[in-house]
Image (cartoon, rainbow, N blue to C red; front, side, top):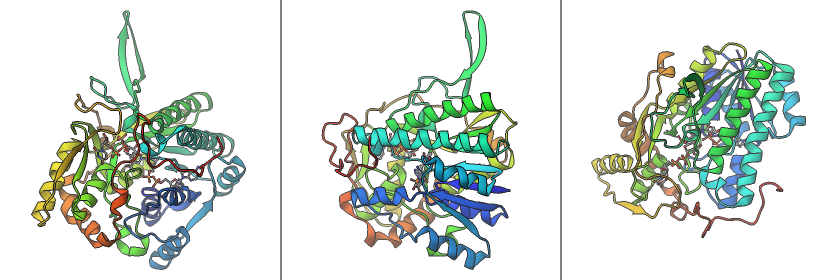
Length: 397
Ligand code: NAD
Ligand code: USQ
């Protein structure tokens, strides 16, 4: 199959591109390198050293004999993206190419506007390019479990059947997201569902949980193929952050009570889920939703697991409950369905297999690169003292 990976220079996009290329697909990546620029905004850096996209592609070709094409440009620019799709003629497009950090979107008005314009306009351009040039192409779009929020009822996979005033219908599951970033994903979902209905596009919306880990079969081949590992207070996700904090001898930053429950998955399962979605496409005009995570934990449970694993390796680990910089429920019901990918054959990797073997090892290996000043959260949802607010605008808004 011909597969285009949007955001193919990112944490998940680059390993996905290699994974699909290694399985015989013809792969092209699209990226505007924005993620690398956002690091410059804060003086942040991936814990793992990163080669340029061009060096990654050249290394992959040398070591495997497989080529990956690259289109460097911005998805919000249709004069760039339309010819790229017309030229490559993808059978499937995997869309990771968005601004994905909730804290980044909550810094100030400019970052909120940037996030929503970047994500929503980019996805609209993807939808138009498919409709205009490759109407049979399958869009595999990365959404987020955070679209649903934390309702006091079970979360279904995209849709819920409701009986109201004696009549019954199956409707999109209600969305109560917790940041302007998560809201951008809800808006994307509505636009994708609409385009499936009016133009007959086929799409899979993967409502993914929080991803952890950094090693995949392909990144392990050579350190020049490594993917990024973020641990700073803006882009770092919770488990990656906790392990860096443990290795650096810093207390684990549990926000508030730590009862916030989320779905989680290993990076290798992200790759497997995306591949399963591609190999089992929906019908023309079908908009389907898979909840993409393998286990659910609350934040305090994760901190305790990291503490136990760290102490087994001889590191004393402290847990601190910080005042929560976010506005979110800290103790709540959470039970989310996630059977559709398992039905397609997903064989999950579980957290207790990965923590010590892989994640601690990688973080210890790059311990000297940890910048302690980046670890504390700097973005407050209440906008009272956002220390990371910067003067350079990512876009005019
Ligand atoms: P990432 O920031 O590492 O990668 C995103 C890539 O997209 C970057 O390389 C960036 O340069 C590129 N990009 C952004 N805007 C672009 C634009 N307008 N044009 C071209 N390229 C653009 O993010 P990630 O962690 O790899 O996440 C990928 C996707 O998966 C995101 O959509 C995210 O919302 C979703 N997701 C991630 C996680 C997670 O835990 N990492 C969890 C759930 C969902
Ligand atoms: N948290 C802490 N301490 C920390 C960091 C986070 O307690 O040091 C808490 C947060 O308050 C939150 C939970 O951990 O309750 C998860 O936070 P996170 O930063 O790991 O994840 P989140 O902001 O939700 O975003 C990440 C990705 C995003 C993706 C989302 C999936 O950055 O792209 O969409 O996970 S989900 O959480 O299912 O919405």
